[in-house]
Image (cartoon, rainbow, N blue to C red; front, top):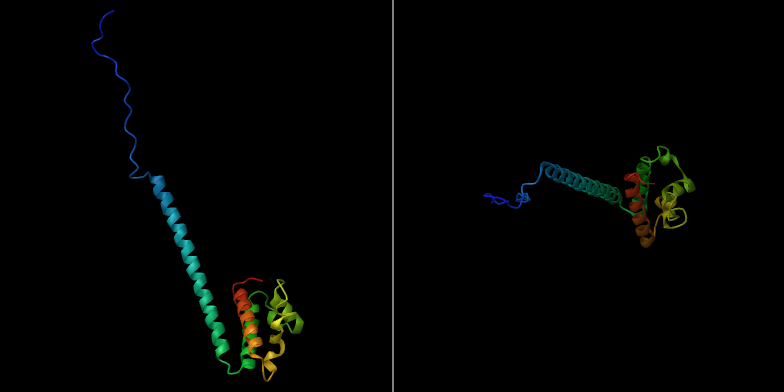
Length: 151
C-alpha cells in the first residue's frame, strides 16, 4: 500500500442558522397575530363605548323626570323602544305579555317580581324608594340586554 498524501477528514457541518432575522413566514404569522389582537381590542373598545352610551341614554331618560313615577314611565318608554330591536311589535304589547317579553324566557323578575312595577308604577302617586331602585336596576340591566340584541 502506498501512503496517502491527503489524509481523510471528517465531514464538517455548516453552522446552525441564526435565529435572527426570522424567515418570512414567521414575519407573516407575527403580523397576522398582531392584526387579530388589534381587531379584538378594537371590538372590545367599541362594545364598551356602546354600553357607556346606552347607560348614559338610560340615565338621561331617567334624569329628565322629576318624580319616581315619572321616572318609571320614562324607563318603560325606553324599554319599549329597545324592545323594538328584537321584535318590531314589542312596543305594542300590553300587560302580562309585555312583562313576559321583558322576562325574555330567562326568569320571572318582571312577570312575578319587582318588575311588575313597570305596569302601573308610572300611574301611581307614590312609589316606595326601595321598590323603585330595584325596578330601575332590573330595567337597566334588561335595557342593556335588549340594546345588545340579546333575548
